[in-house]
Image (tube, rainbow, N blue to C red; front, top):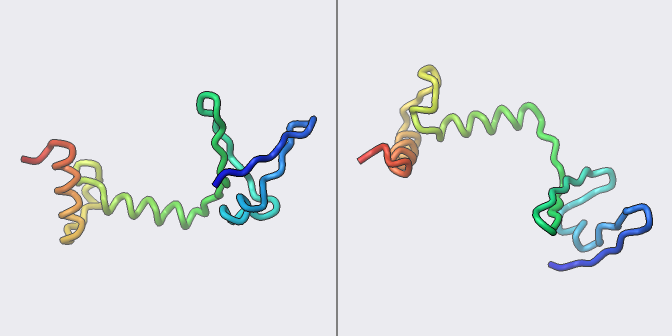
Length: 95
């Protein structure tokens, strides 16, 4: 999707309707900008709740190779073991 908008004399622009709809942007949503070379990338800034952060940390802990997880967090289920073996193989730590 390509859309065009103009800057006004104060440096403001309107996010085109098609872009707002595609990204689910609503009034008062925050946009985050990053400049990469001569281009700007913009996306909706999402504020993560502490519950979402804890959930993601737990997902990452379950998938982490054993060497990156504290002993008390190690759980040996079949899926977790397979993921750990795959990760170790990808790191070249398993023959």
